[in-house]
Structures are given as C-alpha cells and as structure tokens.
Image (tube, rainbow, N blue to C red; front, side, top):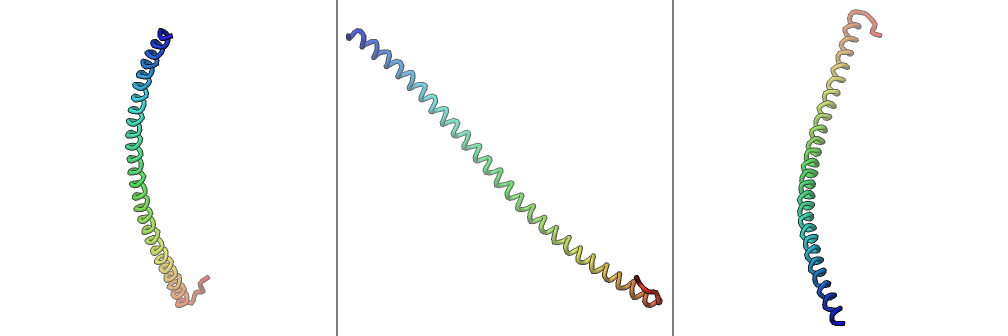
Length: 99
C-alpha cells in the first residue's frame, strides 16, 4: 500500500508546485494588466476632463457670439427703421405717397 501512496503523494506535490507556479504567474499578469488598465482609465479621464473644459470654453464663446449677433440684429433693425422713416419723410416732403 505504501508503494502506491508514496508515488501518488509525490505526483500530487509536483502537480501542486506546478499549479502554484502557474497560479502565481496568472496573478502577476493580472496585476500587470490592472496597472495597464488603471493607466488607461487615468488617461481617458484626463482626456474627458480636457474635452469637457474645451466644450465649456466653446459654449462660452458661442454664447458671446450669439450675443454679438443679437446686438447686431437690433442695431440693423433700428437702422432699417430709421432709413424707412427717413424715406417716408423725404417722400412726404416731396409730396409723394410712400406705399
């Protein structure tokens, strides 16, 4: 019986050592992958933060542009109204009816 058990225990010990070595290699690779993934997530976070900052800057610039355009439109409308009123006055002064 001992002749059967000793080789089995020896085979188990060899298999256990191989398994521990492979398992440790897997753990080491997993840790290395975690570092890589962590670095990639940090890079992505940085890029997203910069994109958000640029988007906020662009929104502010767009808002300022819209305000300038609105002011220009108000000025243009006032200029047209003044021109139309001036034309009506000139036509009235000449005795011509404006249509």
